[in-house]
Length: 317
Image 1 (cartoon, rainbow, N blue to C red):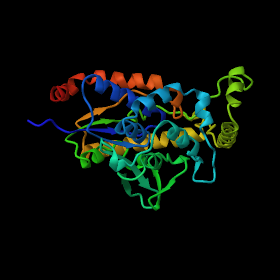
Image 2 (tube, rainbow, N blue to C red; image 1 turned 90 degrees about the horizontal axis):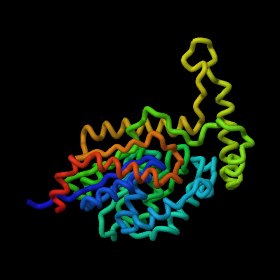
Image 3 (tube, one colour; image 1 turned 45 degrees about the vertical axis):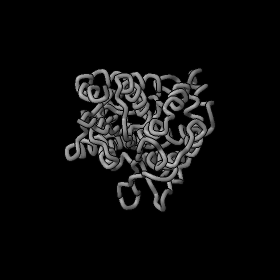
Image 4 (spheres, helix red, strand yellow; image 1 turned 120 degrees about the vertical axis):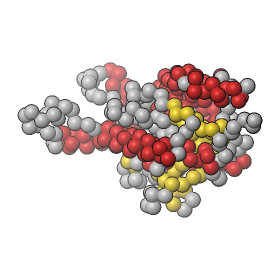
């Protein structure tokens, strides 16, 4: 019998997406290589690097990132449909990864985005690979939408967080999907909670990292301070003694819940053959500097699915 064509659907999930690298590495170690790749948001970045043969380069770079490096890549916007434009980040990625035309890649690849005004799911399967990644990665409220192919595009996770359907369309017979949002019940914080004094030496160094981050932090603290005004203080209320969530907690938490619900709904109608759900509940939205940890979590989830993957190992042998 002919071996099935394997598809890899890499889900959205911000910094948790570095777990995709570990998953791909662990699959390779047992002889499983994807024939087609599809991704949403950060999944599109890792998928593009994999499909273009540049995963080694991406992995080396993300493992080198420090918290200060991450902050240095943030370019505040506020008036362009998001808190950050994302231009500095994409320039940094472009310095590491060579851009290719998607249709010329040896491994078929597709990225998912959403049309901001029509809600249409958009499959990006031609043109600049890095433009497709950026269009797929406009997390609502945080990153500005991108004008691409004559429309404003936002994060693909809004419509198809784990793009199994794109893998099928690219010809996959057997799809391994990665859901990074299955831990929706645990809050994901944009920033560390302020548990130490403002004059703490470490915090002082962090605030000096760059002016852009300082502006972002001051603005978010102002908004969160205004939110404190509306705290429920009535005695006996469940929220009476709880700390009100910050603005970015609300944005990130809402998006995570939405994506998890959409994923469950879509999987009911078009299930993957194998769903990998790494436990990344302890990762925050912007923990891009924790790549090594996320990669190890990705490897672990593959080892736990050894029995399910046995059939594919048989075909790959």
